[in-house]
Image (cartoon, rainbow over all chains, first blue to last red; front, side):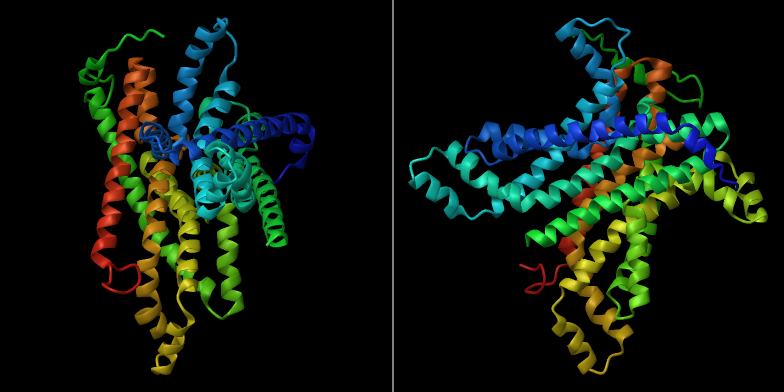
Length: 224
Length: 245
């Protein structure tokens, strides 16, 4: 196999553009996933049975469906939702937005489990103390318990973010030009360097994820 | 949102394959289960092998195990599948390539997806097995040595039986993950459950009906796997010892 490096250097702008899309999806999904996941975790620890049940059903449903199916579901549903909400013309490209929505809602289920473990690892006395100080239950959770849970869970949340970054390759099923699709299916196919671009994508993902997980480990060791 | 439901679509004749649309879904379901079981066997064997390697005193062997895990943890599954389907046949010797290309395309894709998914899940199993072995009290290994066992015997008769009992709960979630990950094989053209959902969408146009049916299929798989693993846990539990009650 002869590797032609010029293909990569010639197409560098497109490749960087597509990497931006991958990162865009990752970052939105991490931010909204953590926020919505934390809300779900608090809901699951609520004293109201119905609230607990709704959060549990949400998390279990998303955790039992493959990501590929979730992406296809949202690709199907998001246009309908947008149409009812904003009355958009049907020609707008909704692949990126539907991928973002799907990833955010899907990852929230996983983040919620991480946060629940974090909240439950904070000793009961903390919440009791907050209540004794005259705080409401919500204030106690918001000001005392959740900040500590975040600190403990930060490495796990970041590791989940790395997994999420790898999972963004699955927008392949929507033909969305993220890093993997752009380099392999478009640049690789058009220039007859399919195999080379697959290996190139593998190396890039390896370097990014390895560096990120090493960084997380370093931070974790510094914190401990 | 207004949807025109048409559940009768499942009993209509499919354009090819001499079956109904429901038959297509059933074929996809079987393919998903078959792929996951074959990949699961590979994952268990390979994962256990490297997991044990990582706990051995020999530093080179431990590094080898660590390298395997890093390689499969930091590259997305879809790229692994692409490598097995497109790159590997170009790298193997001529005679083997001829053999691979002489296979039926669907068998070739199934074989390569199984290997890819199996090795990918194996890296996760490897970590579970390693932590389980390392979580055993060091007295167990010493006791084995004190009884005159060799290292091999200590692993075989003392450490592994205990470690595998500990590894069952995390292995359950890995098994569930693997069944879900098998959907990724649809991107390399394996006609399994989620690919059938797409085919139904293309040929029958019944998007919601087919997606709901396929989603229910995955939920059923999940429930069965979970119950099955709990049953294994119950049967292998030692009364009064590790994980016993």
